[in-house]
Amino acid sequence: MAASDLRDERQFWPQHRLSNRLQTALLVLTLIGIAALAGGLLFGETGLCVALGASLFALLLEPAAASALTLKLYGARVIRPGEAPEIWAMVRELANRAGLPAVPTPHYVPSTVVNAFGTGSKRHSAIALTEGLLRNLTPRELEGVIAHEMAHIANDDLRVMGLADYISRLTSVLAMLGQVAIVLSLPALLVGVNWFGLFLLAASPQLALLAQLGLSRVREFDADLLAAQLTSDPHGLASALAKIERVSRSWRAWLMPGWGNPEPSWLRTHPATSERIARLLELVPQHPVTLRPDSIYSVPESVKAMRSPRWYPGGLWR
Image (cartoon, rainbow, N blue to C red; front, side):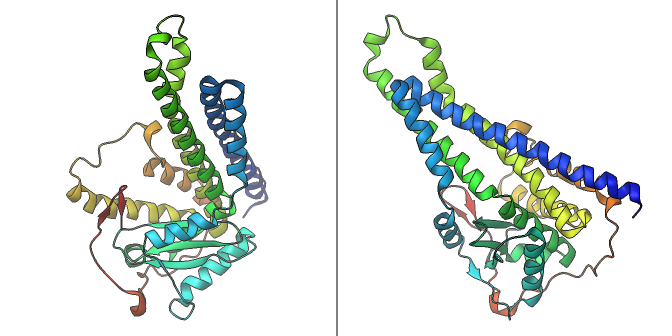
């Protein structure tokens, strides 16, 4: 790689990561501000202080308990090193590159849905891989996906998004209490009512949701960026994203005929796959790599349990 390319790359990564972190900080502060506003409108200064205190308390919580619950909900089980040494080697190497204090534990999810997710904190984390993912991705693509989940763990995204979800729920509860109070005291409110304040209180859950969705999209872009750094192969993750989109579209189109109609970008939890791929492919010239054989990863016999995707209450497919 030429010296000029190295200089450009050294400037590229910090600039993009700084931009993403600034957006994250702004969106988190926006969420806290919305919760504080709802608390202040409902209970005055006391409500404002309670909302701020609850938000700060949530920031200090470890996501370990939520991690165990999530894994149990998906029926995930630990993949032992002897069952899938290639996966363990991949996870160990990526964890080392990411500077994590502990190696995340790979888990297997017996589902044909093509998906992966990370849970926990930097010291106690897990990466869950579905059977559908292992059956459909090549080793190169699988490394990109694992690196993406590793990036979420390294960036503390699980804590940040947990905080965002907590604040969003807190705002919804405050707004609901406000609406109940309004109904109960409606006759007295008809004279001298602060309609603007009532409108803000009623709209606060929707505003918090939009900020939460925006935060999620920013964290996805940042995880893609770090994953490309960890693997030095942006094309691997880009290829995986394209394949996951294609496979998911096939069964979702059958299960939900209306699926596939584009949502407004501000209503998505993830950026559009095409946009993520385009950003990753912009990095490809900076990372010439020797490609691995694109053979499909073979799922260990000891963890196979194929079945069709099922829908569970709350919108969970597994």
